[in-house]
Length: 477
Image 1 (cartoon, one colour):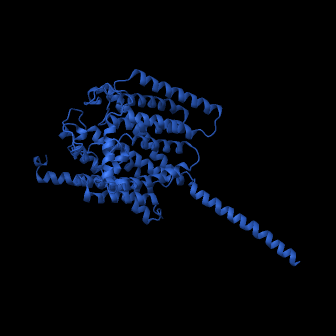
Image 2 (cartoon, one colour):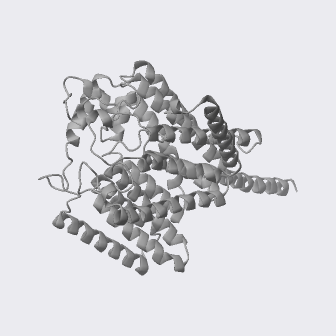
Image 3 (cartoon, rainbow, N blue to C red):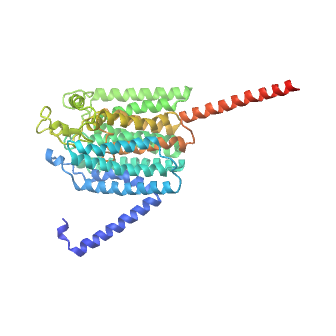
């Protein structure tokens, strides 16, 4: 494509691009909110440039222009993140490195090292290096989040991203119906995303942020947010993404349980209304069996072949449990003659094919050691958030994370960095969860217990010391 331009034009284009990149880096360095906006928009590049037309198995495995643009965007944001971290480190804002981030970095290093024995070394190297670049953005986010006001900014940015996304997809349904129905399953709504399940993940992440905004906003804005919630639910059903629907329903139960401090009459009414609405909604879906949620003659609750993937994964994990087969090799393992099925996209041995279980995907890629390391470092921010007192922030973050952990049982939603929308948003909110005790001015339970014990010891020491002194003095008199 560049052969059509002469050398002078190419030099001029390169110069303009360089100036634009430097300007972008400086803008994000001064206002890290811009970096957050760009990282949230990075999956949209692939979505907007996606052509919703029939493709062969070979065409689905090719790398398109949108992927290069998205990777470039992630690289620029990663550079902004590492600059933000370096500046905070040298100015003294960062005095210690959290242990969970140390283990996070060790996990990524382990992923990069797995390139040496990976079934698809090129793919593993690209995915692990991209995760490293995304990790640099997360480091910058960690150091930038030093005030509650900034956390609110980050949450409001995500709210507007969701709100605008819902409205754009509704508009696309009206004005571009040929784009929004998936070519492989015409009854499933894909919206402006590239896959129905991906759009389902988008809708799943909409509920917690919209409910948080509804709870924290003033009365005039509540009806608008309620309309957005209804639109998200309607589009979610049209997508036919059953796993994200299940995660969202369970997430609603978690939010309700975390929000109720004491069972007053008002809370009891809310529980009853929510339970009735949930029961009615699920009953209607099971009885009406919308075309988007059915898979041929199977029932709505069928796992649509996932058990075959899981059984194959467990067999391969037993054969190589320690180191795995290389980070993010995923469906590459199906090149094994025992599993290979020619002509079926998910069984032809492509690293881009999903295993439909993020935990098994991690164990396949990095072995049981990698899976345990991953579970270990994500547990720290979750535990810290659980130790906070009740409130809308705690309910929102824990609901969001819980939804992703449930979704990861049915989709490979969290095993990568910024390549997948669900994974990107999960890591984004995990960093916020880790910073929340500091931002809300509440120490974690372990720290508060240590402080309580020290204060008790100090008081006991003084109470023992003062009487003994008085008695001694009295006896001497």
